[in-house]
Length: 196
Image (cartoon, rainbow, N blue to C red; front, top):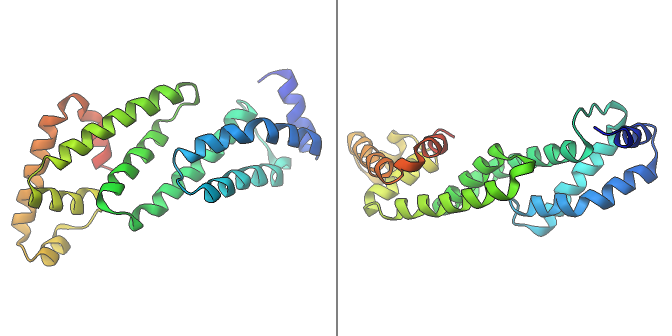
């Protein structure tokens, strides 16, 4: 952290509104652009960014910043975006849930210095993953999405679809076998997605 930035933090801790406004005007557009990648609702994205700055100001007396103000605020926003994605899971369709998993995983991998590279990489992998799932036999695909994406247990799926638990287990095994073969070049990420 530079001496000038340490000085800004000291002033903000002391309640210097001008120093805070300078940070706000400089970083708000960047934070908003980042937030919009993971939050589709424009007004909600604005609210989340505003909340980050509000909490930053409210807790200014307790600020412990070891990196930079930029990194500190991005980390606050990162956590709020992640919480938002997790709270949205139960309200999304199967295909959107897959997209959500990739957004969440991208956030978990996020490194401010590699943001563009990471985003492009996950966009490509997401398309490959979706195509692989779409290539599954219809019944196999439906059971896999219910089980691995929506997180519904085998017993509930069996009762809902009027099938035996053994059939559900077999279809899940079949889907995993097909996907592992198709996604063998991305296996670590594929397994990570299925475990979250």
